Image: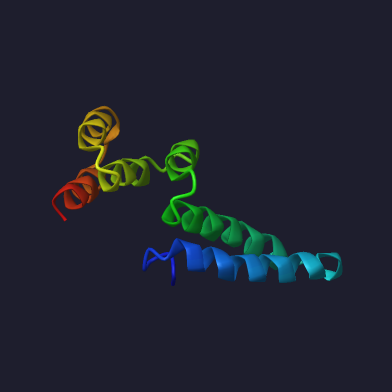
Length: 107
């Protein structure tokens, strides 16, 4: 997937086309089995990830969505190392979060 390759801008282009197609057909959606709702729930998550990868307000979005690990990793990628370290000391709560931040710092 494009978001896994950190190609957020291309992912957004593709997701825009998908979203526009879905909006055009929205009125014909039969959601008795809730698959349509699940699709849009998944689409929302992928759009958020693409926005984060595309550097569009990613710090605000990551923090607002509670994606503190992503927030901290983006601080590292921006070169805001001291801020990332301070944030990590205050908000990292699991060994996996600490590992992800350490990998971002040394990767």
